[in-house]
Image (cartoon, rainbow over all chains, first blue to last red):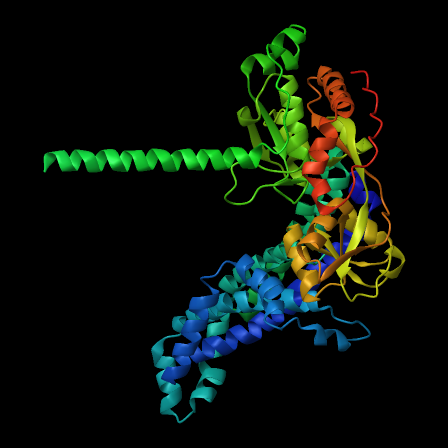
Length: 228
Length: 297
């Protein structure tokens, strides 16, 4: 344990990076996932097909393989995303490694987010959508005003599971150039062979706390959105 | 008709036999890089009750080595046995117990499982670019060093990086969690950890990172593979003393390891082992390091 407490700033910084990966990929995957779900339940046949193909590819591929593709294969094809380092976000430069890790996590998680949303949409009785169309709402409007608000309530629990998985999946980035929590844990166990159980435990506790915060906030949302 | 069929079967069997012979001949050629002296009746040389006597009587030993470090310990997907300086040291040690190279069971150890493997008896020895540190000596025994090296930098052929002083703010890759990565971080570089050295080399070749760092010997191996694209720069800026790990349950092994390593220094097998493995990348065998004295158990 000593090794963790004497390097506590490293510990916090590592989990900070884990949180950074999670927050960015979480937001992007929600946006992309909702968009895909809209395509999947939408009326345009070709779009439905396209979204199904996307999910077929990214949900059926192990995350590590997507990471390997981003980190090893993409640069060989000429996409190393170095241009990203010229951008500045609030005084910080985003490294291409961080960007590529987020990209891999987003592409992967979006497929699960999409399916979670689709299950939510399917949970809304068909009559609701039919009624919305009957009073003259367009597809977009009937989704936005009638179906999605109801679907959103049904979708919170499965979506929380997807986001918890994403939070823990950020550890895959450890092997692709990001010094997040798991990578830092490796560094500490390698240097302090005599304190391994304590180091494992303290990093596990870090993840448990983060996941606990995430699930508790999902309970709050669930309660607030509950239909009276 | 019947006669013909018999003939065909015989011919096929003969062909199979020849091919099998070819196969084994090829394998022998690969693994016998260095002549290792296998002692006869080695069990007589050790006192009753020692681990060495037990191993010599069993006639087999399990040694943990790295499978992913060219020159040090490397096993390709289709190879039968790992090759490199560490496995050669293992053969020398096994030979002194009367165990032939083909009776050694090689087990892959990664940086994280070297101590647990020794403690649980999964392996008898660990020879896996295993730097001697005080923390490790708390939990396992480490005899040696049999080789002293230091980390350097591998950069693209047209890179501006000349030495370790130039890496501040640059992205430098190595294996996740390694000491090498910690060292460059302390020098102000942005550490980029990867799973294996080969992925890291790819990053340097693609220009996604500025440099790669680990023990010089490994880097020279990669530079030799891509002489037009890569070069090793700067002096070594750390000291790694490779030791041989053994279980603390058998402290008597330390004396035997030191004696055997000393003998290999004197009779030239240590240098032969080096020249056949790490020496291939063009470096001369370094001075023989001075062995640490065995700690009282």
